[in-house]
Length: 125
Image 1 (cartoon, rainbow, N blue to C red):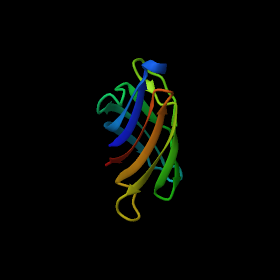
Image 2: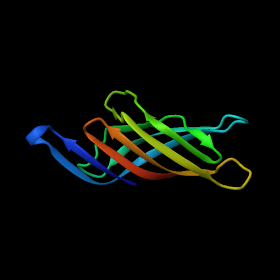
Image 3: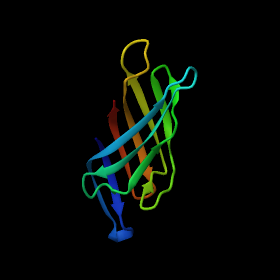
């Protein structure tokens, strides 16, 4: 769940709206002996006029500090999608001590050029 704002049109014809949204978050964690990475994507934005269902956020590979990861939003391209052009994310692993995390909680912020911005929190098991 998160909060977003979106502007459609330009100048006097511009309409701006804001509100809560939901979206689908997918995280991929690769655990290794020395290199553990987390990356992912956010898509399926829904909630009303303040989101664009074509928005897509790519969570670039995150840097690890203990069980915490942080990274930047990376630009991408795919037919019919509008990718975030900038932003940041972080995630914190949880689970049994001494083991790889069994899930993550995190937050993100993303900008979609001049059209809008979204920020939110997520959980992945």
